[in-house]
Image (cartoon, rainbow, N blue to C red; front, side, top):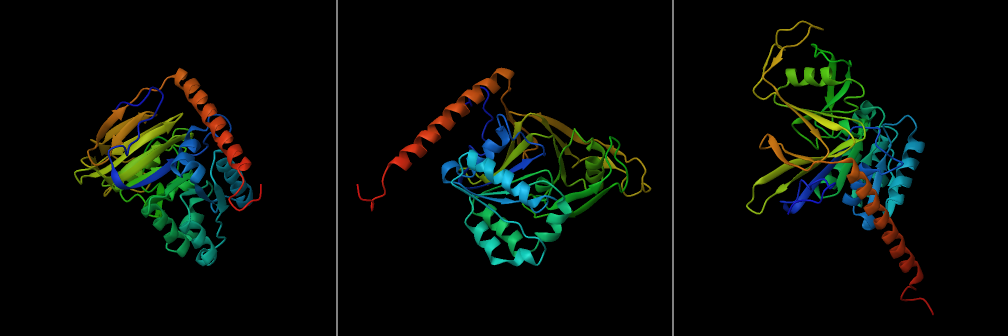
Length: 327
């Protein structure tokens, strides 16, 4: 069945049984108006049945970042929110962080410095608890630095600009929730085309995926009714996603001098706005629903109606006495 106008198709609609989802955000997402990206994350986390863990470890202002996102997800209907904020690699061994993550239906990593996440989370009990949450079906999301850490190979440092150059980007180990994709964020706004292409030129087996601000991909992994693997993502938000496939490209990365412009010829490039669904295994666009300005008005009306209905349900629950109460 075709989705309604203004609705982004579900990349996991053909999956049955266990489905694993990631919400990977390019940073600077809308937190005041329609909040399309954050609303989608909250919905995937279970909405009124959701238990969301916010991890602000990357931020230089952990307390403020944690408070901002817990308040937002509560406003968007989450049943409960809790902050998990290990302050060191040793602190990431604390059982209370692990227990909170083992109960989560959604895990959200804020922006900041992705090297802090690599140093504090990867290979620790807290990091392993994030992997378990994803494996059992909890949605894991991240914005900016929190997006980069989700991949196995994470861009941790790099020069900005349009020309890919030899050794202008540093790659560190991430959590590994995405094995064969290297992610970059604030893509258009900070001119990160060159550094993403330089990483792909050196490692052409990796997909290169750059995400604009206030834009996200919802990546789904699962199985179809016939047992075939499904690995697709949909695009949400105000910008676009830049995807490069260098699997059959030619590059001079093995010969180029430090700082020299890199040759990368024959790569296939996709630019995907909201409404696109891309199949990573088939290497092709799977579906697209055009988004129009009037769709934002329809979206807003639907969300207002949903918010009113949620408040009405909350009021009904508050007015209904518990079974043990005396009338």
